Amino acid sequence: MSLTVTPEAVSWFKEEWDFNEGDQIKLFVRYGGDSTIHAAFSMGIAKEEPKEIGISTTVDGITFYIEKDELWYLDSRHLTVDYNQEKDDIDFKISD
Image (cartoon, rainbow, N blue to C red; front, side, top):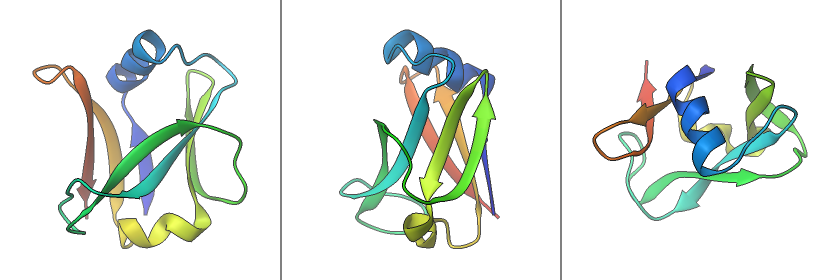
């Protein structure tokens, strides 16, 4: 299980959400939407302090993380947070 945030996604976060070096960004499970592994659930984004990090990565000084109690969503898979230019939005891609 791992977490990757692409440079393109980080650039988008900096421009659209005004994220800066030192920020901590929570990726969390929310009810609604859709994913490739859990129907009716999707990923959300919030700028907040972690309680108990389950997995994290730091890119350009910004830490992206998922809390330990939400790792069930990944089901031991890899999450890539990427920028989708066509939608001008973030894509969450889950792979083996």
